[in-house]
Amino acid sequence: MDHEKFRKCIQLCVSCGIECSNCAAACLNEKDFETLIHCIQMNRDCAALCQVAVSAMTDDNPIAGEICDVCADMCDKCAEECERHDLDHCKRCAEICRECAVECRNVMVPETIV
Image 1 (cartoon, rainbow, N blue to C red):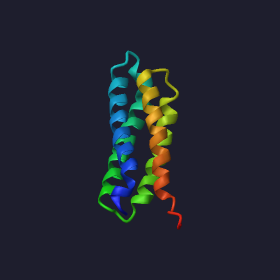
Image 2: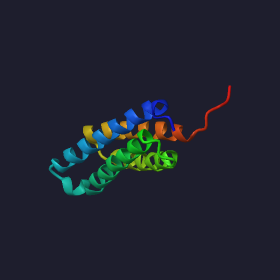
Image 3: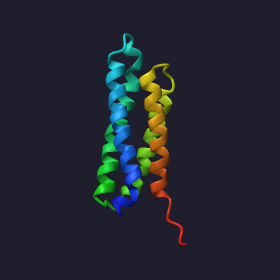
Image 4: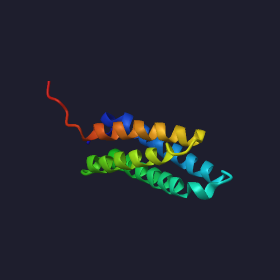
């Protein structure tokens, strides 16, 4: 896999990982953080998986596409959880997670021959 070809996905995975980490930290600072425990866990897992996807794409790992597919599913689940909360940091996180999921799925789409 040519990692230059997947620059956009790599960049979105990095951004998503950062946003998920920021969201988890912000959730921990909320007054009622106990109600956000699942959100915090999802954010941490999503951030970790985004890092794995970046590593797989940049290292030309032969299963990078499969890893990106799993990352897309995790991003969707994280977005769903964040969308349940009326917090600005959760809204930002959900948005970038949705974008990342779409781009990760694009990694799995075979090139069309022209």
